[in-house]
Length: 168
Length: 102
Image 1 (tube, rainbow over the protein chains, first blue to last red):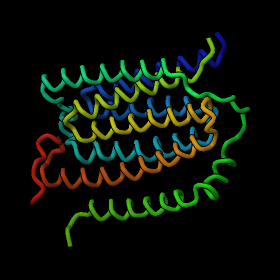
Image 2 (image 1 turned 180 degrees about the vertical axis):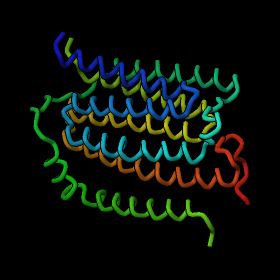
Image 3 (image 1 turned 90 degrees about the vertical axis):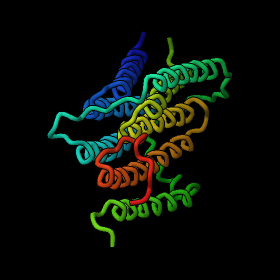
């Protein structure tokens, strides 16, 4: 068992364990902080998959942006000064049926993914990916890149418009 | 044992189902959002795994970049809507939010 294998299993267990904390925890703040470690685990998956640019983006955007937004959301929509940071689950019937459905889905997904003969190719040599991603964004994916920038602008303006205090 | 494509696919499948369970079993809207983020991350792991092992190279990673961009936009708009819901109902339990008028 070499170091990469060991690192993979460590980060896989870390990611899934904290994802389970996110889903099963009754305390929303605990869930939000467990989400931090899940995002870190996914970033380390990217590192193991030789995607260095994506790993940095994951840490900067997910942890530095989305997670902060979510924690702000928790603070602004929950009475944090009181004791009520708890999140109720739905009824027992829904919980049981949701559990059964997702377990079946998990079994199906894992069965399909492990039994399919994927069309694999040669693993490329390790190389920095930032240059290739930048070139791709300004050549083949230029339209998608510009659309994404417009989408972000519209999303920011729209979010500020929706969340402002008083309607005009 | 060598780590291959299947290992990453299994991790991603488990992450996806955990996220899906969070989305359909929780009342609090922010918990639903966290489940959504887990689902998007699972999809991203698949993209990057196929970028390395499936011969997609940069195309897979670029798809993952666009997923991250969409996740950021989605989180911003969703939290703005949640703030509005909280101001109106004083809670964000999505099973009790059942009217859109003032």
